[in-house]
Length: 251
View: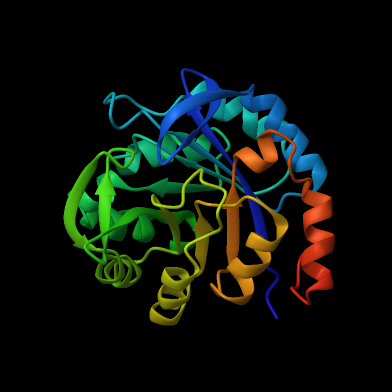
């Protein structure tokens, strides 16, 4: 049985870690390099670093910061934000990233998924999907959740798998930062629909939410930010609780 993964997420803006609710009202959550080291030492399985305003501000991800974070941790490291070409990915991998996460650029240019998978391997390509429910339908949004598209979450998930993505990072914008739990119904549907790992994101508020994301949502990994940044949940405590619920984790 494959172990389930716990993934802290560093949302970066102006070189600092930030956290908001429903993608807005951002507040400072600390120095990304310090936080990355803490999570690596505490037993996180992976780390995700998202330069959340890079696409909107039309600039590249902060390469120097990526390099600093990579040099302080010994766990797989995924970087996203402002990535729109094979060259962008080459630079990030040279500076310590293990995988990249693409979102808006994948929707605008789906061929990019094929190109990256072909050049670097599917295991390197994470497609992040931000979606919210509109009139009962899960709609994909771009630019940090600001722009709705005409894409349905489940149709897009199937397409990104066919194009060579190795994982899907699904964030429910309705749940993001609310601490009311993950969107387990949508997660379970996604997990049934595709054969690549699904990372649950948006809504973690307590340990039971993580348990539910695996047992009900059938997620392969669960990602969270504020509950880790503000020390509401310790990773070791969380993993012990998951194990006691017969969820296989690396301790």
